[in-house]
Amino acid sequence: MADMSLFTSIPFLKNRRRIPRQIISDSWADRDKILNNDVNLFCWKRPVNPEIQDFLAQLIDHQPAPISFRASVQNLRQQIDHTKQPWYLETFGDGFHAFWADIELLAGDFIAFSQTGQGTVHLKMVTDDACAKFHIDAYKLRLFTTYNGKGTEWIPEIVTNRRSLGRTNDLIVKDPSQIQRMESFEVGILKGEPHGGNMNVKGIVHRSPEISSTGANRIILRIDI
Ligand SMILES: [Fe+2]
Image (cartoon, rainbow, N blue to C red; front, side, top):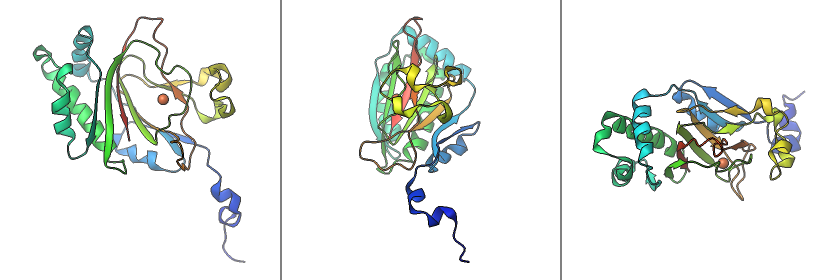
């Protein structure tokens, strides 16, 4: 009998999307696992950098204006130097440099995944709930780091009711006790479902944490490719 696996012998299984997996790692070197066909979230678990944390604690009082810029791996440093001024005061010292070195590292490595060789970097302070409803992004890949405050929340596939997307959270989440939340400084790479795109895996269902009722704020780095 010919050596033919079940997978290759039944055509409809070839096209069926696999159950999405999430990769949680303490190593940034594992980030390329997000490119696997069955992975829709990579999370780099890393500790808070106290120097950057101290810098941001001062910066928050100055309510820095949001920053957005488009960059390639080649011109990233130039683009950062042109744009970072609103997030700078001389008294901030070393924490300022550590903060921007971190953004340059994350952005450079993430933009390297881009087929166009470019990405858009967004940095902002938020005090509202932003996207509090669980949803899927219409981007192929998006990087999120919350440098201050609660991080992005996401749900494992087993408790995700995809048929209820667009409706209320209590319908989308089968078991709220299974909601996962990234911590400050952790880096998430989220796979979405671009309009008209042909993705091999369903996008990760996620949302912004609710903070508006607490008076808290968040500092978020987001990069889209
Ligand atoms: Fe989102």
